[in-house]
Image (cartoon, rainbow, N blue to C red; front, top):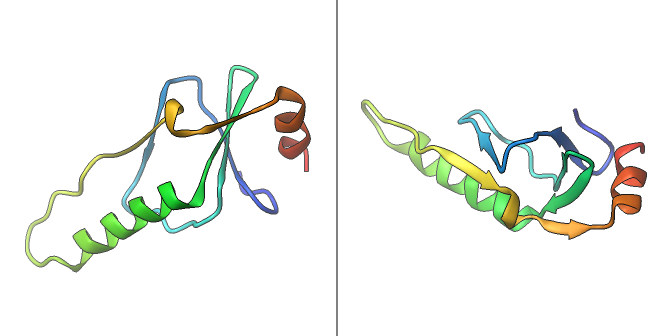
Length: 87
């Protein structure tokens, strides 16, 4: 779900996979069982750059598995997360 300034995901696992058609460069607000973290733009930009590099190659290509881990996020308070989640 895309909010005004964040892309919001609800994922209960410790990882979230980004697929090869990913092009959004908005910070991700990750809700995991009521806890919130923000995945910053530089992490997402690295993923997009990697995917662009693989798209530029010719022939048969296997896209890398691009995973964001919960530990890569910046923890924010539940109150702030709920406020951003409901924007």
